[in-house]
Length: 301
Image 1 (cartoon, rainbow, N blue to C red):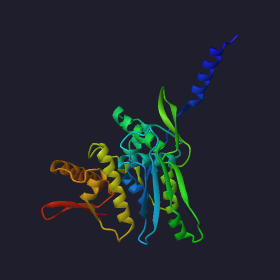
Image 2 (tube, one colour):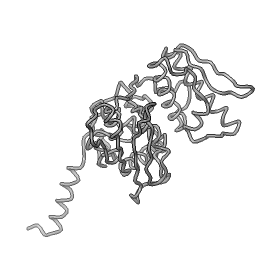
Image 3 (tube, rainbow, N blue to C red):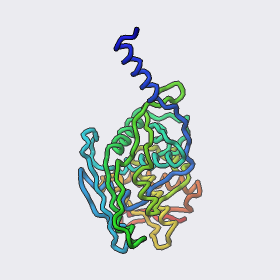
Image 4 (tube, rainbow, N blue to C red):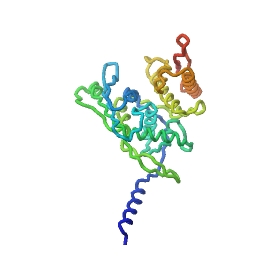
């Protein structure tokens, strides 16, 4: 006869077996970026807060609020530009058909790597912290004014939920068990971007720039930023073909870098762009100055 301890242990084992998911990883061929003003300005909201973001030249505003009340959210308490690239990779994996993912899959997607390429423990840890932050970060997007521009009789339009609605699970990958995540629904910022029809999609091969430069966290953010700027240029003749270094410094949180740091950032930018030139993503690039100061880079496409 089984005693109560035997029953409890059996239940625990059965539950663990249910929680283990066998991974079927689908490598994305396309990298997706929700390119809305909301996504691009979310990192400016510090701690709990609400901001109104002007989303077009007509003076239309969208209200965005962020809640950091979950005590498990690790500092810094803002949705960083690196967090956004992690989310973009997660969205790309979701859109490809993956309903489960691991931090390793996300990192490989962020860098255009194949499934058999190793990811360092440090990179896994950084991506894991970012995913966990997105899972706990509650966001409300009130885009009523935008909706009214399309349909006049709209009373209210909001999307709310965590930035990434996913459960943490154990995933079996080959002979190993790793911590992973299961999507519960389409990521919130992606839902909003689809409504506003502001989505960038590029070949994922563009993210693989390891032959040109090492993929540090800063390089990952710079690369994402350059893609967004270039894609916007390509879609509108009204957009300037110049990318200011000032914008890049701000994107990586180094608004006033010292001389050596600024030079390092500029070199990374040129290495990425020269790689894309070789890959025929752009035709050419030219660094330009204002006075004696390097001001930015001009893109020819």
